[in-house]
Length: 226
Image (cartoon, rainbow, N blue to C red; front, side, top):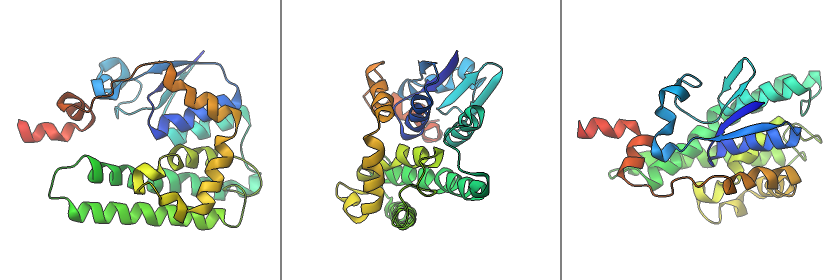
């Protein structure tokens, strides 16, 4: 059975949605990043970058959430666009991987975690996160889903992060992204989304962001105390 290494962050959640949409049986293996379990030797053999998600599917090991989405879609032949839209699929999938995720994540880090002084970093990453989400909103203004009328793996990739837009950009941020919100609401209504979100009930992850958790999640902090 496929093993899915996860926590409740946006990137594992999008893979959970994909697995549920596909109806693939899987074993959900929690990796508590606030406890540092991502740095354990057995997990590093699966993903040397010490990040979740990752999957082990027989003799195939895949890490990075968008790579996993593409692997699963190609494995099953589901949630892929027509061949003539493959370029658009790859472009928008990589846009999420290289833009939406990193800039949203760094915006959260600098607004909520990093110590002062941080004005420059907050300005840069919040600006870039907002700019990237604006690009997606404009895209969704002219089509139901990211690649047209059909729901694909690209929509799953977007959904993993769009759920967190208020956390990234502020409580009212979705008011300024009406097409992202409409897209989010439509995917939230899918039964597979409810099943994916129910993963939170399978395991009690560490909730405290104490000093040990910060060192586990942000190893660069150790350089300041060494």
